[in-house]
Length: 146
Image (cartoon, rainbow, N blue to C red; front, side, top):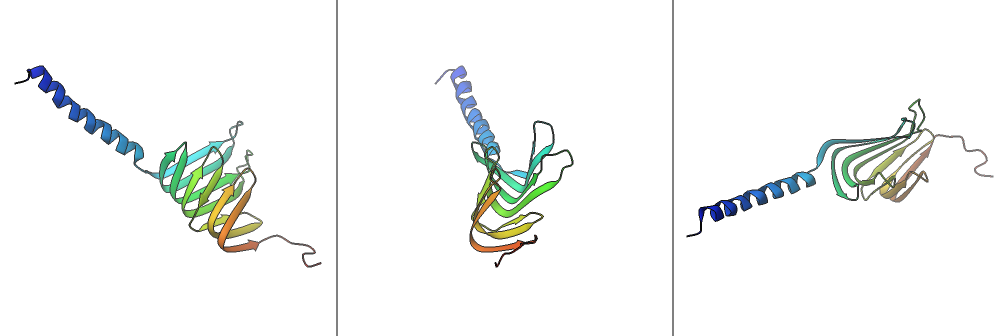
């Protein structure tokens, strides 16, 4: 029969495994009612990312359910520049890129666009839509048909 100290050590190993597995499961558990605010160096609001659920996948990439990305002008008056809404998307805050296969709606003062299979690059302020595309302009377009 093994000494009592060996039995105690052996009994601790499964508890450590259970703790490690529980900690790993908690790290991979989705964040409910997730928010990620981003500010400029001056302390002004630059962006607010929200979702009903988010899970970090790799290198600060987030899989988000009910994504709501609100980009601000970055000035002290907190003016909204662009709003992006999607039921499911991947968001990369460091690159300021969002993309997804499902529906997206992009709203600005001057234009609204929607579609599927999309990529939004905030640095360029460009969105690519690859299916079921609809665009509505809310600005005067002079001499369009000239």
